[in-house]
Image (cartoon, rainbow, N blue to C red; front, side):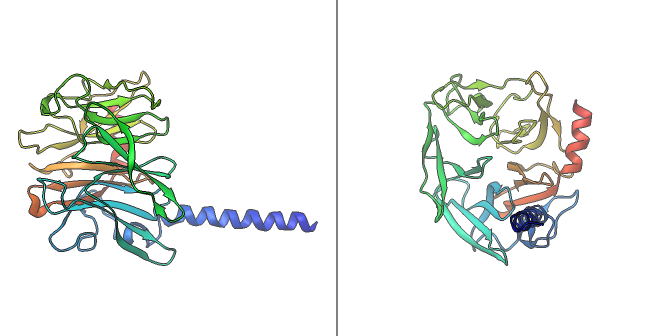
Length: 303
């Protein structure tokens, strides 16, 4: 065996071990802040760890593709974003470090499929999506990424380059909650058009909070909104013709009575659904629940 060939074998073995370590982290005791994973019944994620005294956790969670960065939001009031913060825990190879404040006065977090961009929204500038870029020293300061003359909420970029958001688009007033629709923007940043994804994905009333899978195979939406915005979580699957199936309930364990449910997000390993649940500010918290089996069951029943 030549020396060069032996060196190549060593390099390949090291790469294999590194890739295995990346994959196995999801199943390690350290994953998800070392929390005991939930089953089919939702439970609060990392109680007593994420928020400071007087704060509650809310909004959308975002997790890096390797599972070693967890982003989430805290606030002190539903009425404004004065105390809204984006925080992060990072796993340094030995332990979780955090929480670290990433940004203040912004929320609606989402990470680009390549992990290099962090997208944020602000209730102070409803038509603008902000982007922070990953640098060797952390995330850059947020800068405007998309700026439109219509409202954009809960922005998500998918692998194809399609951009999903909730919006009043060109069809309604921002102040009219009944006009908001789950919508699609094209990959080209130069194309300012926006498409209402219409019925059955959109129902009558406010259509604002959602999560779309990175491959665009399904969307989890907050629906059946009451006048005070209590809602339930439903799922719709994208068909081959790019239309969407009629949304189906995620079931009584998740939709367990009258409550606000938003900030839905599925972990990159596909195992868990995270979402904010609250009947009031006092009990507002991020919940998580096992999701992969439920997803398979609902997909079989829908397609």
